[in-house]
Image (cartoon, rainbow, N blue to C red):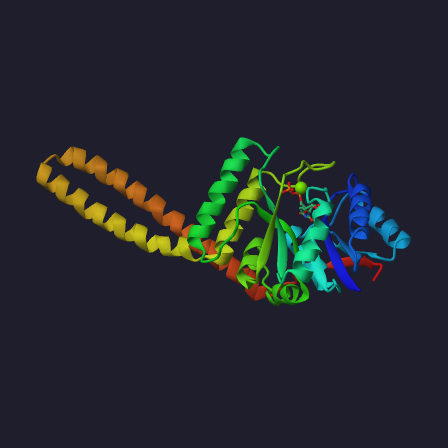
Length: 306
Ligand code: UDP
Ligand code: MG
């Protein structure tokens, strides 16, 4: 019988965990030829999430949990879950029931019988997310796909079931700055997409705000593309040409006062551009610095059920 590891990153999810466990267990019971294990990763929750996970693991031997010493982020939690999963197939699911457990059966069928290495949920809409977040998400995917040579599908989340071969390939990428959507795309493999309608979180609150989403988007671009740094060269060339043309125009027009204020504007503009690109280079260097330290991606405080 096949084993499916269901990896669930949890950060302050006390309100939804029981419902998640109930609904997902029921969905798995419906899958013929497979049993499951739950790997819950408590990402430094400050509510009763760790207690709930402990009682789940006492009540059901299929439930295992790992508690981090602090909040390391969803990417770290997913990595920890995958490292501790022993299944023939591994699937990532959010704890808030936004990833419909009913799709597990179809996903398993696709990776088991249809020759796919991966089967992923594809959100068809972003109902309940707000127009601005919606617009920014679409723009982000357009930008990242243009900058990176990878295809990152708009609407593709982390909800996906993978074969053991693909899971092992994902584990091979041990980088500190992790951007899972990029990593999935980087490792390749054949993916089947199953569209599903966005549902609102069953209870509790989202852990993301505009600031954290923006940081996440920048992380994604910088992790998989060096295009922003290359842009400095093109902008530099453009500004040099613009400066020569402005200088020529000023000299030929013969209006020294107008020319002086124009030059002041140009100096300010050029300083701004330079600082902007220095900060981009700084971002790459700081990421390289963090990688070179080889710090652990997460630190475990407690484990249970293994
Ligand atoms: N999560 C996590 N660590 C974090 C933030 C989120 O493990 O620092 C988990 C969270 O508990 C949930 C999943 O990641 O299971 C998705 O988070 P959320 O629902 O807040 O994101 P959204 O669906 O709003 O994008
Ligand atoms: Mg959610």
